[in-house]
Structure formats: C-alpha cells, structure tokens
Length: 240
Image (cartoon, rainbow, N blue to C red; front, top):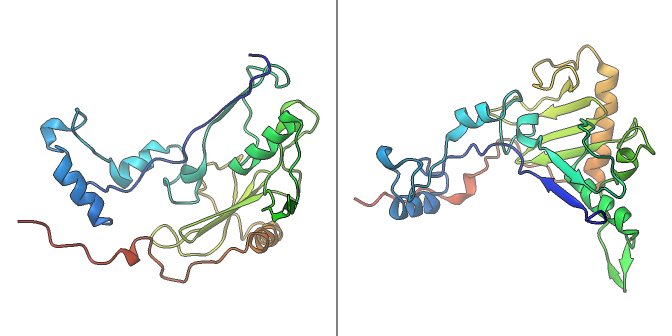
C-alpha cells in the first residue's frame, strides 16, 4: 500500500438547477414526472427524484458565494485528498490553490513518466495546462503556482483567474453585470469585497494573466445576452 496513490476529489459546487419542477430541460422534467413519485409525503423516500434548487444550493456552498455553474468559490471550490505514504507527508491540511488540471502532471511525476510534448507516435497531442503539485507537497517548493502564474476558468460565459491569493471574476446576468472584480481570497473567501478600484495595478496584472490563458486555450467567449438553456426550444404543452 505504500506505493499506491489514492486521490479523492469531490464534484464542484452544489447543484442549483431544479429539473424536477423547472422546465429548463422539458424532456428531463417530463421523465421525472412520469417515472417518480415526488409527492410531499414521498420526498426523500425510495421512488422520489428531487432537487433542492438555487436557494438551498447557495446555502450548501456556505460560506462561499453561489453554486455550481458559477465561477465564484461556491461553484468551483472542492476538497482534495491525496494519500501516498512513500512520498507525501501525512495528516496535513493545506489551502494552497490548485486545479483539477494539476492531477495529470502530478500522476506523471509520481510514475516517473513524461508528457510526450506536441507529438506521440506521429500524432498530434494536446499539451497539458497544469503543474505537478508533488514538489509543493514534499516541501521542495513553497507554492504550486509561483508568483505571476496561476490558472483560469470559463463556464457558461462566466470567467475567473486565480494567482496566489488573488482572484479576478466576471459574471454574466443574473449573477453580475459582466465587469471584472478583484478579490483577496485569503481575507475574503466569500468574494464580497471588490478591490479593483483599490488595487488597479493588480487588476491589470491579473487581466494580463487571464488574456494569456484565454489565448493559449483558444477560448471563445459566448455572446452578450447568451442564456444556458436558450437553444433547447419551447417547453412542450404538459399532458392533461
């Protein structure tokens, strides 16, 4: 067992969509209605299929803001547990920023393997966007992402980038007005205090990091006014 690596990573953020009662995906809502008993008396029992919706999802992410599908800490923050007695010191709790894209580089380093680069056996290979966290866990380095580096996020039009304790965040409606805010996650993990006007140079530095992330990943920003479920078509008339 000493040379076996265990990695446990939870899903990100509480689910906010209520597909049982909100007809955002009509086929799912109809399937739940036809297949399960979601009467008040049966909620939580065998044969029910329920969601708790946005308000309780927000509560489930406390003390962070919002929930799954949003780039706030409530939507992206997840616990990570790593056990590898051969190399990783045990029984430590750390809060250093890392991303799921760091898992593959970490496993490759543990295995003594290397990413092949741009080509493998004559085929193009996509590069890795992440860093091994092993040097940090073993004490060889003081941080996973050195100053001036970090990683970005984009989902459903929301954007974010984290570098050290700093985070920039831009949210589409109804969660924000699509302007960039700057937050100190060490002092403000709930992202309640926008420091962009107080630290304009830091904001510009973070925006440059995001622009590089955007360019490297060929990110295409969704158009203004885009809605997650807008292309699913009108909901069918419920059966009488």
